[in-house]
Length: 422
Length: 149
Image (cartoon, rainbow over all chains, first blue to last red; front, side):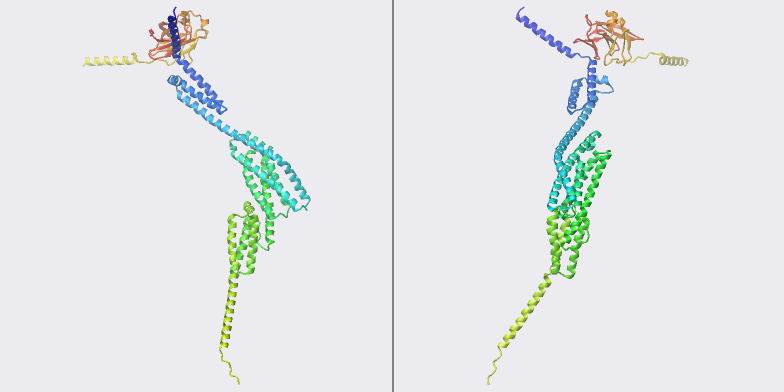
């Protein structure tokens, strides 16, 4: 057999194999096609129910696409078998369910990432808290010593106050950070077990405990130091206002975490109650101190014990003074009274206390502007300038007249002829 | 007049008789089933389709095919019906496709189509409307009641 014959035979064999392959591929059992479709459909359907990651959902959606591509050309056949259902309807339903699952899983994944971020943040804050725990204990001891030793000198008080400030600011920062972190998390999306986990986490770091400690420290400090300056008290008032706002925000979040946990809910209510007690103690000390600071300058304001009555007392004093000088006219005394009040207003209230009065919600910018305007009015009215000048001008005028009369009289006397001698 | 009346009576009787006992034939009926039925042979040689309720015994066919019942238990019998209403029946190992028509409680063979001397390996019927397609081991045969087209 020569090469030419062999190669011809080889080509024939190749052709035959290829053809049979094509032939084989062309002939499929219709029933088998439908059964293959049903088998794959059922497998996908079962997998949809058990999805637990976004990647899995994505892969399943691609599998549904392949199902559609592979069996789409046989849809008429399949429809006849699965009537009254139909191929397109089944594929559409699978896609919808898979897509909805993917979206839900994505939401869960995003929420898990947020929770992981929050846990990391809490861990960071916890380690900072540990460092402050030590100084918090020493603060407590210092306070106890102060309580026993009432002769503590001003330097010691200042030092203690500075430490308290540092602790207050740290806890304020912690509360705000936690609030921001919790605020970004939709607590309503958490399951009861996840909420419990967060509640335990907050417990572990003793968030509520630290806030409670801040309040106790501040109350103890006010109670043991009756000679605090108005400046100190106003600063504390501003700190209290900040705490109150932060607690109002975070307390609500913690309350929803601690839902149905009686003991913890009670703790939160205690903190809320103590913040009010702290505020009341502060107010009593503050009003006493402000009153004393103002009285020492010889200014007698009507009694005040709240921001509105304090503002009214200032305004009433100025209005009464304006009315008095309007009736009686300006004078040195009135001017002195004005300058005394103005000095207190500009040098004490505006220079030293304005920031704390605003932050503490005692006076507003508008209040301050109104008082400034009335003081200007008082200043003008109190001036004794007009009346005094009139007298001086009148006296000068009289003097000038007298001088003129004298000069005229003298000049007339010089012009008389000299008498004849005997 | 009387003749007319008689003619009318006869006509009336004829109409009534036709309405009561005459045979009606509906034509252009399509009996084609879209898919084959695949039924497993049980220990008695019986096959049954759950969906349509069709049941019959294949022992006679097995005898013709020289296949013992013991060997055939569990094998699949494939059945499809063409547009004209003829049943095409075959099974794994069969050499023939049997074309049958239905009669009262029975199926009568109208044709026996030889396909393979060695016996069919994995036969399957597809409905192709103008014919029934038999596929087996990569081959396809277009069948009518008369045989392979």
